Length: 207
Ligand SMILES: [Zn+2]
Ligand SMILES: [Zn+2]
Image 1 (spheres, rainbow, N blue to C red):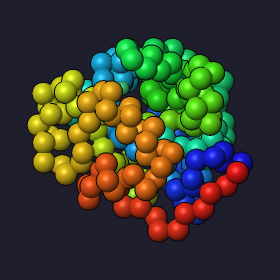
Image 2: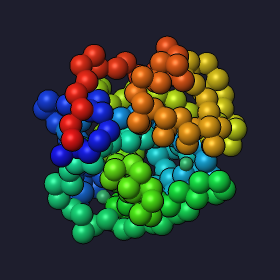
Image 3: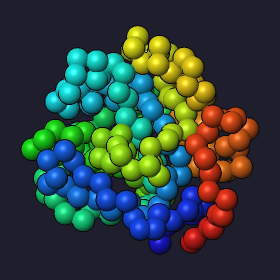
Image 4: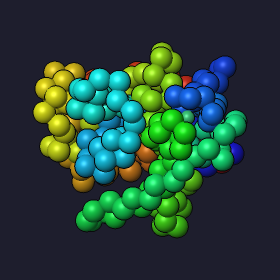
């Protein structure tokens, strides 16, 4: 059961993903409904727990985040290794997120859930995954659609995103775009233009 969101296409075979130490293993069964890089200060703080592979990493390696339909992401093992970090977005949406990370290796964003009843229900149980951290080499999941909170991007990130052809939203417009495209996929082209991730032709809606 995928919920009411339109299926963005199955991944066959599913893509295997894991935290850095391998304790937590995922299988991703579908393409994301949409994917983005978020430059907000909350995501930056969350990412800061990750051991850095270079001094520039926080500045220039914003992970691609996928928003998936409920049940598209399966935790195969290691759920008990996940810690939970609760965050609350700012005015006007106050989106509450339950952000899971591996306690052992500090990989942030193994999975993220909407925390409040209102948002959990609105997004029909959708789940976010930091694809850039848990399966950075999967070719099917490497591309992303747009930037969120682009004004608060760090200097290195701003430089990188300048010419990447992806649409740059602010925080509020980015959240609105996430809602709009999740529920009305036909808006994707209008809102994102040609920089959007390649879309799968065939769509099905499962209830
Ligand atoms: Zn780990
Ligand atoms: Zn963010």
